Amino acid sequence: RTMVLAVQWPAKPSSTPRLASPGFCGTTATLPSDTSRSVEFSAAAAAFTIAGSAAGLLRRKRQERFSGPSFRAALIQRRATSVLERSSLEAGAKLLEEAVRASQDTSKPTEFSSYSEQKNRQSYVSQQAAEEGLEDVSAVDEDGLPLVYSVDRIAKYWNTKPGELAERWSRFLRISTPFITRFLYSLINGRLWEDEGSLASQAVDNLQELGPTFVKLGQVLSIRPDVLPPTTMKELARLQDGIAIFSNSEARALIEKELGSPLHDLFSSFSDEPVAAASLAQVYRATLRATGEEVAVKVQRPGALGTVSKDLYVLRKLADVAQPLIRRFTADETDYVALTETFAEGLYTELDFRNEGLNALRMEALLQENLSPENLSRIVIPTPLMSLTTRRVMLSKWVNGVKLSSLPQHEINELIIIGQEVFLTQLLDIGFFHGDPHPGNLLKITEGEDAGKLCLLDFGLVAKVPPSDRDIIVAAVVHLGTQNWEGLIEDFVRLGFLAEDTDRGSLIPILQRILGPYLKGGGAQSMKNANFQALSQDLLKVNLEVRFSIPPYISLLARSVATLEGVALQGDPGYQIVAQAYPFVVRKLLKNEN
Image 1 (cartoon, one colour):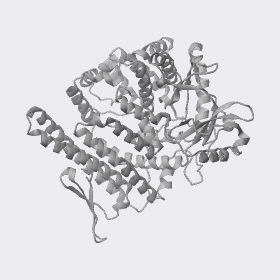
Image 2: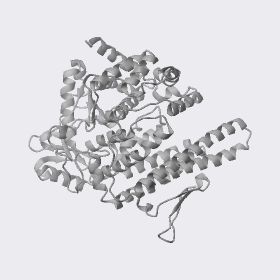
Image 3: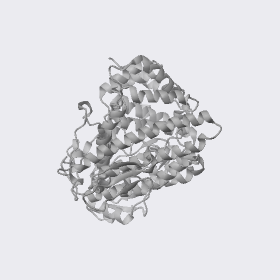
Image 4: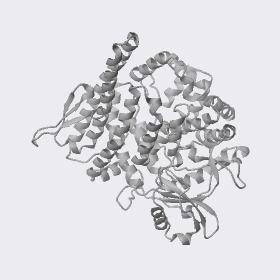
């Protein structure tokens, strides 16, 4: 069951290899003779294989159960499996067809198309270093990699290194395939609960081994108690600030290189081991020799830029292949190329720590202008030392604190009120919001004059929301809170989620069934008593019939909202995010002169 893909390579160079997947009963495809070097083929084959494996296992499981007493259940499962087999086979074959065609033209290097839609070409990621002239947008590092995100310049770089791209794909498949196989086997054989702990541990180990890009993706799930069971949550929590460290000698050497002085000249004390390790960097505690001030020293992981840029290059190629296929088979008009670009630009920008320092300074100034004195007095943003901050090393004021998510429920509830007020101010008042507020970045200060306050860390990823969209989001919260589905649909049209010619009447009952239970609170747990047959039909209808699109900056906003709601749910399992946001929105409306 683990060997689900076979490639028959020809004896003669003039012949062509053939691909077969037993999951599709021996379905084959003829491939060009030079396909072995194609990154696109590797990606397509992986998707084709996984889909085939899942469909094949489900079919065998269905056949085992079909002869049992539960004829109705078996019949439903047979129909569902047939749909899965048919759709995954068709989509997988189309993906192979598109990818192989793309790989056949070797006369010129890859050149990515622009954003597929003019409206999505705007950047939503704050790039303070470039905006303030601290970094030339055409600058490269010592290896020739761009220091400011540019998909075309990254493509130009990696086009000269096909061997490294092939090695990266091989590494991804070698690490991920055993986990995917175990997960599918446990799922289909009803062993998920029994295998949960070992699967979660293996998944986290795999994400760490694959590097920063995959750790970032895993962090999105690491704080959703309403979605994941406690054992899995405990394992995923390692992705927040417990990532495996790199060597101290490398860290010290990089600090001396970036700051231009020996460590003992800069610091009177420096911790022997890092106090925290994250996806892109690790942090040491030190004391400045010149001033005696305690500081946090953040050091970037060696090779982070190369690993991240390589992963983002491959993701962008997949988006170019996948987008036309998604639009061919569904009514989804989302610009996935732009979504990928937004994620990529945000992650790439985090690799320049000067952006983080400048973002923190700007955020502090904007909050001082927009937060009430009472709320402002309850938060702390550690001051960055810009004179001792470079692209790969950052110094900031040291604070003693504990993660918000590790506190007792009543303490989480006290501080999350401040957190949501700060986030809503960032999003709806100033349009400049923290794009990565995972639990490792939200602390309760435990010592000193600021003890008891909420500390906000890591402003490497900050996003901007256009003023016009802020007003529509306010209206959407009001319409959602009052269950005014007609008004909410109009808001979705204005935000670009839905097309102008959307059939409003057919959408109203769907929104009632999907969003109605969510308003009661509890996050995803609110759906546990829902009619899943009706919900499945609704989602299928939306996917196949309703033209919809996801604006690019929503990918950043959704992660922030999901994380904050996840922390709040740990303090209050019945937390109602819409109800909690409603008073803020009403106050904003009452103050609005328009």
